[in-house]
Image (cartoon, rainbow, N blue to C red; front, side, top):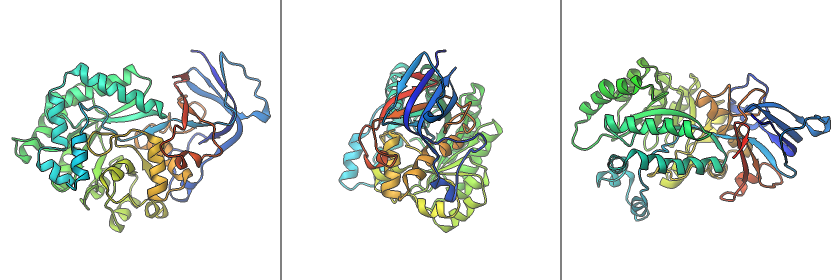
Length: 410
């Protein structure tokens, strides 16, 4: 594999010694940067870095001059629904006219709408559409991603979704982790207890038999799945080696955070509706609180209370929630900008949240999320910019100029 040297980097961002796997509380404001730096990538890994003033004396098959530009580790997007059949802009218009999430669902919209469309779409079509999104997120700086099922709602279609997610990991340079989210909604024509039983007794064993899911997730929310149902489902998944991560507290104080803590979830995601009780529960755990600012923005919900979480000494992760109904964007620079603008995070905190902490949320802390010797050579070079605060400041602008995954320019 060819080697690559990036010279004259204005700032090499998120440089960490081995052994730092997440940051929390006040440490979230610390973002190590080497100025006027070089970065040497070899055999798909980070091989060397330092100041240009030290004259590395390295030559490589490919060399890039990054004068005036920053180099960041690629984003790790720890929460997406990247595999879906079709967009739902008709529901977007309903929202504009005042319809609530629950009202749209009651009219046959929402998750069940996506499931109906997916069930009518072939594997090849689903894969081709998901691949377009995969290349889209690569272009905006993402190098590792979690992909959930949950728009199948039948054993056959949940299996199809997860097979396609795995295929994306094989056929793109993205590092892909997969999550089984059969408990996303209850399909029409089946009683809720019967569907929970189907998820536990049929879907989980079938998915485990093909080793299709790293994790298990449940939409723990009023009108979807209760705390008790969530606990039963994730405990069943754990018996098959799927670690839990929970959709928690998006629309209501649902108890999702507490069940995530109780079941040893890797993360609890959303958190638009949490208070002191949930924060205290998180402080007694190793669960990664994860904000999805794109969903709060799109749905007009309160944004997760980042300042309270950080000031309580907790870590915080930021992911995109890329999905057709409530967050139709996988643009991680935009998520960083929303975290700064609407959640009052500093640029340093938001970048830590979208790299090192999301890597920890996907158990990729040893390989992704920072510029560390021996980690996977997933980085991007920015457009010319004055300092790192320009990234969230210039929301919507093209800030990622060149992407390098596994040491190869994309």
